[in-house]
Amino acid sequence: MEIPPIDAELALAEVRARRAQVVDANLVPGWFWPSIGALMLLFVAAVETGRPWLVATGSVAYSLGLAGLIVALLRRSRVQVRNTLIGAHGAAAIAVFTLALVGLGIGLGLSLDALGVPAPATLACVPVAAGLAFGGPALMAYLRRVMLGRPLAGPPGRPLAGPR
Image (cartoon, rainbow, N blue to C red; front, side, top):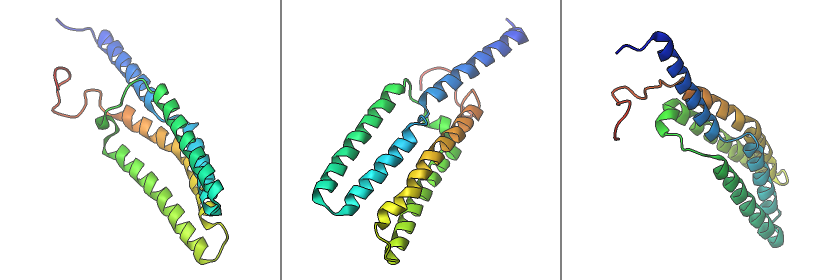
């Protein structure tokens, strides 16, 4: 039995649309990134004061805020994207993004501290928080392109269906 080309084309379009829905449903939303940056900045500022009551309050607020963000993120996510869909390029992008922000924060904080600038960790955290707020959505856009650009059949040599 031969499938008419138009039917095959429509079926592939449907598969691509469903894949896009799965990818979009599981990307970290834009509101998450500036929220994490703000929580982190407030936490660092509280710790850097050295006042026990501010450190304790900041720690509790950070913990509750982070827990709330994670719960909101998990409720939003309906399915789990396989690691093979992100691929090596996606994993490398996540690693580079993370290492760049960590390096920026540590390097700037140590430099500011060496210069005797007050509140060096808090000041160093500002560009890191901005990097999260603006870079996080850009990272998600890149990962979306990577995932949607992957072949529909999956990695070579892998069956299309059946037990795994």
